[in-house]
Amino acid sequence: MAPMPTSIAPTATRSAPAQTAVADRPPLAGFAIVIAAASLFGTLGPLSRFAYDAGMQPTTFVAWRGAIAFIGAAAFVAWRVSRGTERLTHLRDLDTSARVTLAVAALAGFVLNMSMFVAFDRISVALALLCFYTYPVIVAVANVALGRETMDRSRVAALGLAVLGMVAVVASQLDPASGIRVDAVGMGLALVAAGSQAVFVIISKSGYRQVPASQAMSVIIGTIAVCSTVLALGIGDGDGLTLPLRDPSVLPLLVITGLFAAAIPSILFLTGIRLIGGTRAGILILFEPVVGVALAAWLLDERLAPIQIVGGLAILAAALILQRAAAPGGRTVAAPAIEADEAVVP
Image (tube, rainbow, N blue to C red; front, side, top):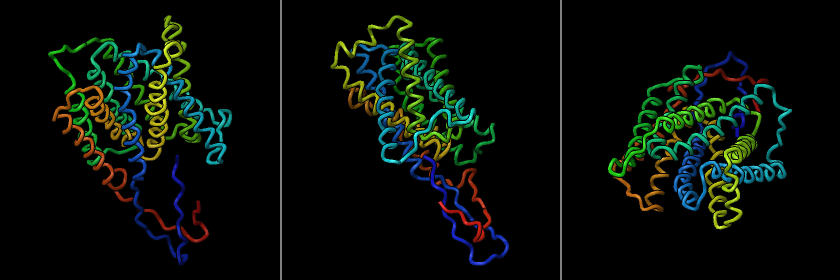
């Protein structure tokens, strides 16, 4: 959600405006929100592995995950609206630009999910992740090209550390002894997923800001659920869609995945993007593979290599650099004091 405007006390005199140093540090809450989102997204790897072991296929898994996530997000929206915490936003209330960007974000979410899960099926998971996690670099370059953000030394250092840390964490999972599955289509799909995620992050900073994060993600997740269901039916995987109904033992896993690896982190991630910007959020979300690898070591008895621990520490160091950096662009913004009759109130 957008931060409330800051109240500025009226000046004591009506003298000429003075220059006041204004700290333009992004809120610490935004960093914590994105890290929390990354941690929850990191559970998706082990959870999807359990779902596939239970007989689910990528398309039907995405459909069920999206459907349950939509129900959870919609219930959260209904609860907030009933308490008066937020107002329900209707699509007809939005301008054309907001409707278009929300539709593009929803389409990008669907393409991201289907491309990534099919890539997982065609190439080694670690290789797919290496391709996918190029998207923070794409976001950073795009934001600079669009004139939205600057890449000062602190951001360059943080981005470099985070990417190197991610490579150390993920590449360590590639085991030549057991074979590395390489497929041009699979790698291409992983890069398409990276591009889709980059588009989502870039346009979600302010593209449909009138829509609260929970409502926007309800629309996006609902679109993913509908499109993936139609796709599953189109490729003749109707039996896969009914598997959880025929085998209810799979449902608890899907509920956990839909809520804690889709609905909640998606809302948190969009909120974080709006609070701290796409470049910072893209860097911090690289904490996701650290959580995924740690959970795999714990739940799937996969070995945790020392280089992966070093990589995780590098990503945490990047987060620390971002938070300690002063204003965007590494500068202090000077703003004139506001006179008494121009004071801003919440």
